[in-house]
Length: 222
Picture 1 (cartoon, rainbow, N blue to C red):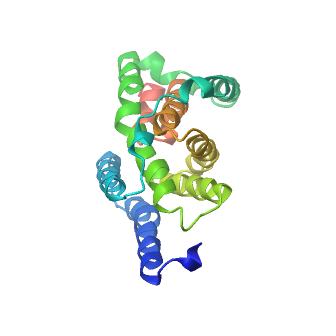
Picture 2: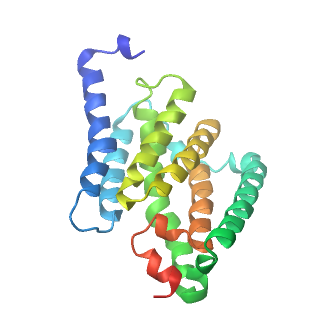
């Protein structure tokens, strides 16, 4: 399909793709001082929404459609429960001092993260890496499997800003699940809720330091 596109259109998409999903994470990673990625994420999400709503073929109901939730709930719960048990056991076995560190040391902060993380971080990420990515770059990745793989790879690559390999590896596999869920349900809301479950799990069991610069001291109570 890419060969059938007008040369100008394909060049625009490729350039935009490289700027958003390669150059921006690299630039943030190379900053001499680490800061919060949220302002950059919000700006990127605003741009992506602007482009989506200007696209004549975009179905905006995908952003908030909750109807697929009931049909997906069983599989979401089963996969999450298995993942939660494995993750909790792994932290208990390998880093017992970190297990439930944020809950134990800063319970109010943990509760705040559980409430604000899905709104301030998860949903903007889903706009950029699911709705925008899967709709905008369909001409570049026409096969569903290729789109899922590309979306997961871009999502994982963005986590180089946290300067540890585990965040990249874990988010690649999570990204495969989230991208597949979005493709299967056509609902950004359902995909976002699933993403929020896993993100909240990481902060709860003590792995928040892999995904947030300031979480390590909070987990260890320092």
